[in-house]
Image 1: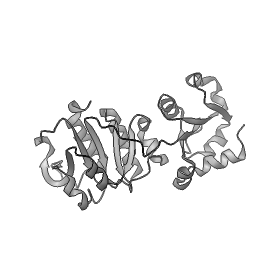
Image 2 (image 1 turned 30 degrees about the vertical axis):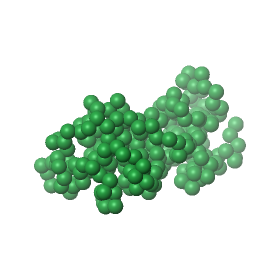
Image 3 (image 1 turned 90 degrees about the vertical axis):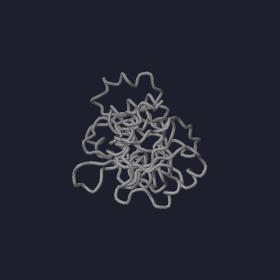
Length: 246
């Protein structure tokens, strides 16, 4: 049985300030919860529709506490109106943990759209990128739209938030930055290791980060659109370096 205080807590996690205060966030949908159960995230509680009581095989080996709720009530306490099967309360990871660098790491400067961040996380997962570093003014990883659009990939890609000036000063890896009217990325011979920096959806990379970029690169097209969506840009660049990602 779910108490009124638990329902109040779950509803409060829709807002960033309460997610930060409680160090908790929500997952919605059986598929997403299944994926996170196989990750190093700690699930505190699962609330599942009573009608799915016989479909809990995926949870059988888990020590997570499970409560049952009717579909109508379940959809009323979550973020998604279409979700009537399951909700999980999950503990956030420590943002200050040490970053272990692999061949390539994606860096995001000022990404504000939750859908873009979620899609980039999913793209990183597809290409085997293990770490993604965001500027502190980027959208919150645990925003419900980010979680939903990542399609469970957030559980396999480590996402960190850092002051990017400090980050670039402390690390000496080669930095590729996507800047309009620079050299075509097809013509670039990428190094075995590096950082791939992508900028804000409308303003691009902050000018005060230019000095940290070792190689400015661009994606050229034949049409008249002003620019590419940042999530698409990241996918194209990652496809270019996929053979170097280990």
